[in-house]
Amino acid sequence: MRVTSPTLSFVLKKILIANRGEIAVRVVRAAREMGIQTVAVYSELDRNALHVRLADEAYALGGQTAAESYLNTEAILSAISESGADAVHPGYGFFSENADFARAITAMGVAWIGPPPEAIDEMGDKVSSRIAAQRGGAPIVPGTTEFAQGPDEIRAFGNEFGWPVCIKAAYGGGGRGMKVVESADEVDDAMASAQREAKAFFGRDEVYVERYLTWPRHVEVQLVGDTQGNVVWVSTRDCSAQRRHQKLIEEAPAPGLPEGVEEAMGEAAVKAAKAVGYHNAGTVEFIYQEGEFFFLEMNTRLQVEHPVTEEITGIDLVEWQIRVAAGEALPMTQEEVIARRDGAAIEVRINAEDPAGGKFLPSPGPIESLKTPSGFGVRFDTGYESGDEISQYYDNLVGKLIVWGKDRPTAIARTITALEEMEVKGVATTIPADLAILRDSDFADVTHSTKWVEQTLDLSDVSSAPSAAPPEDAEPLVERKTTVEVNGKRFDVKMWVPETVGVAAAPSAKKPRRSAGGGPGGGGGNGTITVPMQGTIVKIEVEVGQEVEAGQSLLVLEAMKMENQINSDVSGTVAEIKVSAGDTVGGGDTVMVITPA
Image (cartoon, rainbow, N blue to C red; front, top):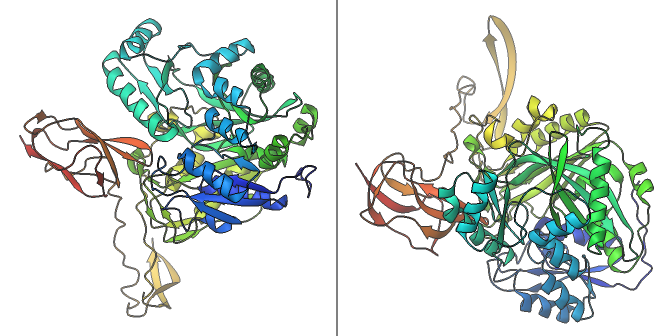
């Protein structure tokens, strides 16, 4: 049973959603249920996006990139004024953890559906949040409590505490601007890359460094606080199935924790939140290893994976956010929240990436067909419909499959069934890798870690080439019958084939072609270097006339806010460089020519 009521005890007429995609759609629907009008904002590329179509009204921000649109403060503030919105929901990403933006909103006399700016300042900054966590009594991973001033400082930390270390965006989250460094020689490039990603996604490039644990699980705590000083933790979530430090699959509650650990994490999260006067929704993230947990960071916003918490509690977290922002007290005590928990839930992020060979290469492009699963305990949150396009300029999330089960094994089995039913045509997706994760005994036994997907899980046979929808003038299919013999046993079978295909020819089929996305820089081993996806060149690492080795990095391509190294497929000499930093390229474009040795 959901915790909700049809009307509000305060006057709130219109919410502007300073975001796009799936989370914007999520907020539109929650507000509509509460009788509140919604205002969408959009870039030029999102002019006809789903969140724009669903909102009561919409305002253009201009531009294509995030910096030109969803990170354009002046344009968003103008939309607030023009629309007459009396509240702003930031979603996640973009301005959701920007204290200056929150202050600008409240200075207009508009309600900010998020935590107080002071809490964002302290907890949104991953460095000061570690200090706050210590003040609240939570153990922290060894790391710096100030921004890293340069590569030498990071090298000194690694030499003292041991390698690998992790460079992290101080104002980031979701794995953006996060680089694991294995040795002192890698620090300069890793720090520069982390700063570029952080600047592109969050508008700030400060970083810090901390020790990198060898086989940890990522366990986080969802909490909500009100302006009366009450804070409750709603559930734990395990988000250990990751690649590139970005989550693939999340589940609630976190499974396999020793008795008392979950409660201890919840209490530590609440203390950390109270230490900074926190209210609204937030998530405290912990690293768990061998019975111990360490504070990692606090996300001062709603998380992508919040639906799994909703599914096991029946609590609409977006509704709670809106009510708290209006000054209402939390409707439930800690004991009442815990008493509501039931079963297990799993969320699968369906990303536009080709997981072939474990590479997870971005796969932007039009969604020709999107067919989602349904059934008991199945939910799909998305910002797209068939015909919409996944742009290289934004996040690659197609949608989130959320599945509830009476227990964890049921939830896993139901999620597998739902993924098998789902169809996404036009772009490659992570679904094959998601199925490999869910079917693996390590996941079932909870022996996986944040490094498991990249270091242990076998994805060598996984392929997800973009599949095309049938053309409108495709030849109609007809039913054909034939008889086949398998291992000496006779079977009568029927199939649907084009009219012009005879029965004898029907069983014959070409072997499926593997995806070409096996890795960056594949030019067939002839020195013609192409890029595997649409993106922007951010760095050229070689020059004409330079000798290179096979596998050596030649340039860095940014696609969907992630940096990808394009490597040489041969040893030889750089004969021609066809691009410059800042250029936009398309999938398959030749960017460099290497004369083989």
